[in-house]
Image (tube, rainbow, N blue to C red; front, side):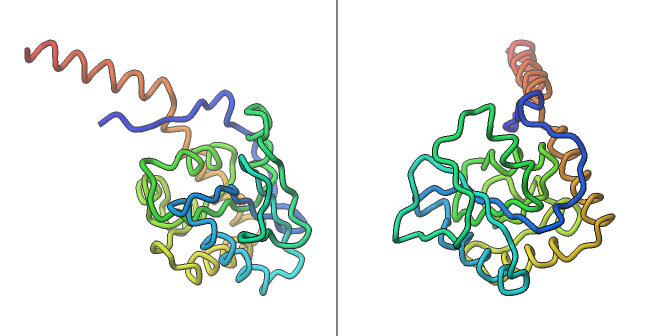
Length: 195
């Protein structure tokens, strides 16, 4: 197995403190398997506990009536690749409500930028996220548990949030392009040697 990886030169951010006013991020993609509806419901649940919760979102299409973003959301339409790490790093949590993923690279990208992730158990999320250590997991379509994970994460003391942020960053940096290249070369070498 050669797992997916992240360009840790691009997707990286220095250690930081939690925002004074909490901020959560979401990728705004309509495809049903991405679970945008679940993510937005989880944000709504978190906003009930944190009325001043800010939201950052980005995606390939402008917001539509069928998936309204919370009032005051900072939305970026088709951000340049070099701007995406800053969007991840501006948040205290990233939420991913996917129903299915082949891997789910945004999980790794956000974590590489020191942003803990609250995600459904889709794609690689169960392998990347250690529940309560570097993020939180919820079952697919379980917006209530996803929202509760956001609330728990945003309720942490500054020190505990920073520890989770550091753990997320460390985990993601175990999935570098160099690591993937080494694993792929080792697999090819084994094939050649065993004929």
